[in-house]
Structure formats: structure tokens, C-alpha cells
Length: 220
View 1: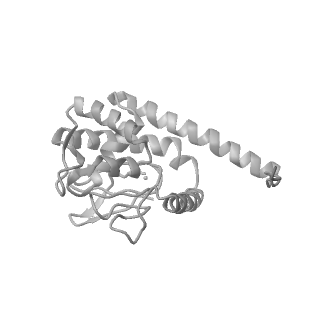
View 2: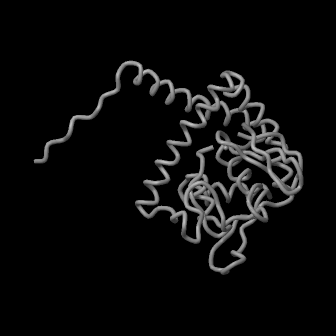
View 3: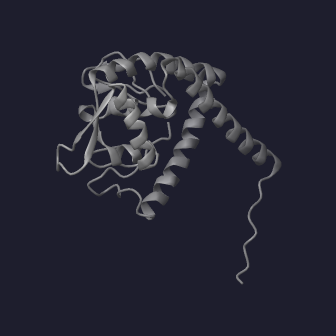
């Protein structure tokens, strides 16, 4: 039997930081989910609506959407069915090849996500942004970006997402609406200023501010 290499155990400070991250991230997600419940919607449902509001043509292939929000295909399908029941999305044949299925944001869905974004950004500020200094927040974003990059590299190596130089986007964004890659677990919203455009940042998904009709602004 091969000998199992001894791991590098965490020292007390590393262990304390790791446990604080685990408990804090779970508490944050529960708080964001709870605040969105005033609209009868959960965080995972809001995330799908938000991503669609930022996608070209406000539509995205179901498989690409699942990769982008880092959820299983079956979970996205069930979530989409609930949103479709509320008239916020529709499922249509893919425009490019007609073989796939795209999830499309409706006018009612756009109106709903814009209203919910106001609740969501207030929740993000209350439960995270306003609790820490700007330096701490930006440091958290940089740390999570490194975690994301490692996860993306490992996913590409395992063939789970397209390579960055393929016809998909690789990790970090969608360059072709019919192909997808990983992204941040959850980007931080600003207030929507234009119903047709949105932006994102690095912490919690949601529509963002726009500086003009052709460019999105990033909320720190």
C-alpha cells in the first residue's frame, strides 16, 4: 500500500481564519436569501435572473447558464421551471443551431429583477460591505479571485469547461452566448440605471449601474 503523504496541517491562526470564512460565508448566503424572500424568491433564483439581465439579448443557453452560476444542469432546470411559472423567463430554441434550449428573460422578469436588485444591494451592504473597510473588501475580492482562478484551471484541465482559446470563453465570462465558462460564485450589484444594461462585480450577482448606454460600470 502506498504511503499517504502527511498533509500540511493548519496552524491555529490559519484554522481560525478558515473556520471564520466557512461560517461567515454560510451566514452571508442565508441572510441574502432571507432578505430576498420578501419577493418570494431565493438567492439562486435571483442569480439566474440577474445573469440573464446581463447576457447579450437577455438570453442564454441553459447549459451555459448552469456553468456560469456553478450549479448542476438539473438544478438550473428546476429553477428555470419555477421562474417560468411566474412569467419571468421563457424557454426557447437556441437561435444559432436550434438544437439547444435558451432561457430568455421576459419584460416582467426584467422589471422584477430591477426591483429585487434594490433589496439585494441593500442586503449586500448591510451584511458585508458596510461591515468591513474598503481595503478589507478589496482584499477579499483579490483572494477570492485567486480561488476562482485555481478552480477554473482545474475545471479546464478536467475538461469541464472550454479552454480560454476555444470558441467558448473559458473561465471568467461568456464571449459567445451559446457557450459558457465559470465565473465568480456570486458578483455585488449596484443600482440599475438603465433597464437595458447591467454590470457586475466580484461578490454577489445583480444588475449594476451604467455610465452610458454602451458601457457598464463595475461596483466595487
